[in-house]
Amino acid sequence: MGSWFSKQLEPTSGHFTYLILSIFLISYATFSELIRNRLHFSEPPLALLTGIIFGPNVLNVVDPEQWHWQDTVTQEATRIIVSLQVFSVGVELPKAYFSRHWRSVAMMLVPVMTFSWLVTAGFVYAVIGTTWATALIISACLAPTDPVLAAAVLQESRFSARVPRRLRHMLSAESGCNDGTSFPFLYAGLLIYGGTSTGHIIKEWMLATILWQCALGLSVGLFIGHYANRGLRIAERRDWIAPPAFLVFYLLLAVLSVGVGSTLGLDDFLVAFGAGTGFAWDGWFANKTKATHLPDVLDLLLNSSMFVYFGTIIPWNEFSPRDITPMITPGKLVGLLVLVLLFRRIPIVLLLKRFIPDIRTYREALFCGHFGPMGLGGLFLAIEARAQLETGESIPLPHPPEHHPNKLAIETVWPVVCFILVGSTFVHGSSVAAISLGGHFMRNKEERAPLLAAEEEGLGDMVHEGGGGESEPSVSGDEDVS
Image (tube, rainbow, N blue to C red):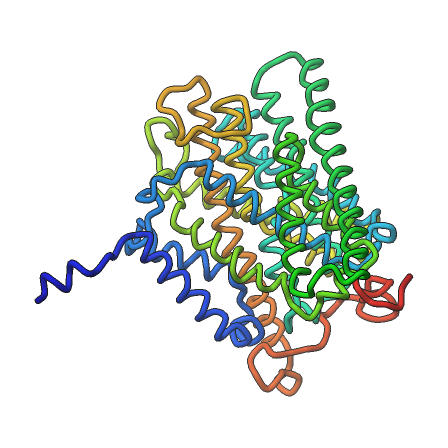
């Protein structure tokens, strides 16, 4: 009987994945209000921890290696997830947002991001001991603010309501843009690594990266979004489209923008963000669908699932010295993580505070400097970097090659980037809890909320009223703004 029963069971790694992932998502959904608004945790660090626990290095229940997945699967999965998120950011921003706040976003994208790239490269070069070109490649993967982690921190919750809305919108807009604007930094590092002449580097960088990938990519995205909006309006006005199809249209338009961008060799993330921005520029679509909470659904299903997957593929054995990378040690990686978290953004945002209109106080500058999480966008860029180093194209080999002229760089990029991403996920994902608890216990007893860290008033030393807290005009979809 026992033999017969055991034959009926099929406990494969794939089947366990369905079981564990669904249990995690159901558990989080059931207790989401408690976790997000009472414990002040977001889903990415919990999902990542779930992947680590059930992954091959702990319980060994879920092992993607048994599925024969290759680097291309990770590349395409992160491409879709991040593109959907940046598209969502473009849709959720206040209508015509960039016409009023472009100066603040531009400051965060150009001087702040350039500083982040260079200072992180300096830390990688000094601490890990790579070449300068390899350091520039690694730092480009860590320069952007991840839209998935940023959304987990900044989306509607008890804590986010305590942050001025203009700061939330600025950080969301930055996270939507800078995964795409990280491509110039990545390809600058790759071109320098290639060792060609300065003139050739500048020519290729300007023509292929800046003009073709970025400028044309953003333009194509805005074009797709604008005319999709017009087409959907016509279909809705003539009763050609059923209400449930609005959500399908949203998702498929995001996937379409990725398909167009990747097929043409454009910057996928800028195409997706441009499409979302152009699609919701007037706020009409957001007003139609704001009751569906579609971005929250995407966060729970897709983003959390991707962080569980990331937890199962973390290269733990590569965090220690190996024959090919003897300079990588756990101590160096921890030191690099601390330096990156402290100095990648905070000093430059504090320094440029007076030139960023949406940042009014130094407390706000410190907050914006800290909340620059690194996550799935960096994972995609690391695979992109490896692909370029392996093949000279954006399509990676199934696995890193055994013998290759760029072997050292290929084997260095992945573990360094992954370690920093894991650290950032846990640090930034738990920052809300730390800030809330710290603020609670720093108050006098009579001023504390009845429940632990349940304060609701705005964070101190931030401007919340008199236009300072809002991102005028009002949020996307409101009818009172033309």
